[in-house]
Image 1 (cartoon, one colour):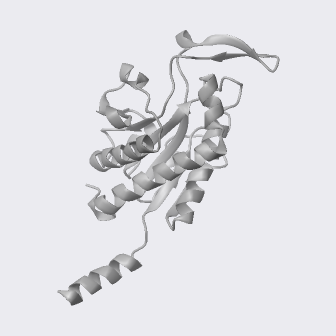
Image 2: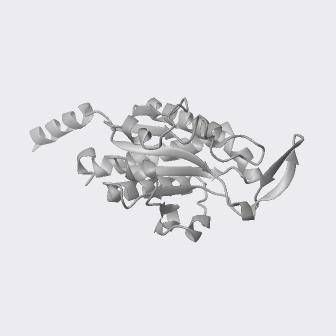
Image 3: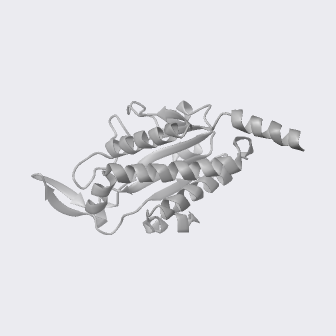
Length: 232
């Protein structure tokens, strides 16, 4: 038994960690939503994705950057760039419908904001080839985010079926980056950039680091339990 345990321990120690594809949502001609103060969503996405990549690498995790330069225009090309990875996470920031926006002036420019929606959300697709692993990892990330003091938005329940509402996980079956990938996949909405207070919070470097740490912790815990070879 001791020999078997030693062999298992050596194999576990020498095994490569999972390769995580981190996708930056939007880019190029499509900057995504516009924040309450006029900043494009892509800029928020790129900042947080960069922090997440740094956190993962500092922990010895492997990262594949997807669309960090904003040069991928076609949605289906994002999962293609992730081929060979073990998990796909797309980083986004949220907005809200026009009916819930109010006008205001910021730095001499007309902008819009909301007061009714804030908080993070995690999305998975039932059409993804690995829906169970996608849900398991999304729930793990959501649980760690909650323990770190972040609050999931309940607003998504207006349009999406709950996968794990307590941890902020929702089904969004027809998202191209989720169902066109050959990997377990999650889309993460870090917060609502149309909410004036939350926009400022999302720009805070310390908060970004805490959020990235929670995402990295939850995902690593999920993949260590699931096992790369047990995606199905």
